[in-house]
Image (cartoon, rainbow, N blue to C red; front, side, top):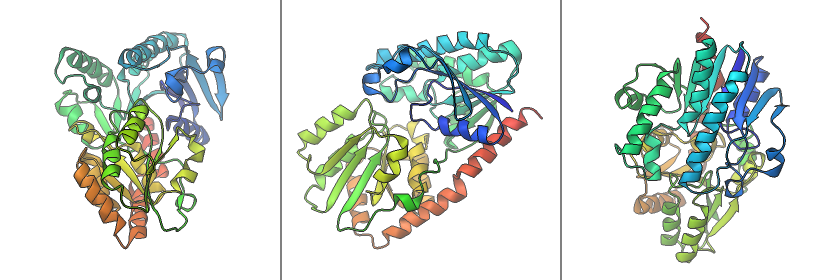
Length: 397
């Protein structure tokens, strides 16, 4: 098949869409990605110099890449929205220059939902069906950033979201809980398919296994933003700082990283926490190998609780036990897999109790084994591509 992918984020940024596109090419498809200039994973949200004046069109590992010159993300809510809209506007203009002949438009859907506008424009031009792969629910995601639910801004984006999701022939969702929201809150009757995320092949449990020692090492890996509520972890660190052999590792970057570092200093636990910053994907297994268990936390929000963060699948693929302060779908997965301990979102007392449970749990290796088994049954890469190809091919039946 000839697939047009719309994604604001692509290589060299670390999003799973890169692996998805390259695997689709390996499976005999032709893939073109319409994307923006990288700035998400770069310091201060700035566009690297080498991308300001080049890389507009290139082919990497068989994937054809077309970049539009979006505004840099920088810092602050206003700059973020200007970045969102610059990509939405320029990509929508860019699709008018693309030729007819794509069999499907695949929208990779973390925030913002507005990137779907380019897919709608291409569909209007040529009648090409759209698959919207929804990972961040809009407008629900806005509430994490402080936008008041049912306020003027929220309701505006509710209408925007209904139009964009509603124009899709299939909405593929990463969490089963998304279905209810789309049906009841947005009142859409589109075809919805459950296609949970997977983990890249490099997260093999043999490469991520920790060498035995006397320490207990807990790790958070991923984006550090408001939604991740990493302050819950740091407050737990402070409550358990007298346990000598317990150490905490934080791998990743994001808008809240400096605030989290300040909190570590404020609570006087600098000797208990090691920060590694943003790391390239190919190095992540070496960091995972430092950990006895992985941490997953989220902001306490009933809508965000519907999300199943992609890091959960990666933790499980690596055969790692999981300790969570998170509700909803993720809590259910941890419980069903019997791969760790989970308490309520932003609940420091419960996270403290669950860390202590893990410290004294005799069968830690069994928790990791359970995580891997559940991953292979529910979230494997092969299962993902079987499902996504089935969804795409069904549009041409």
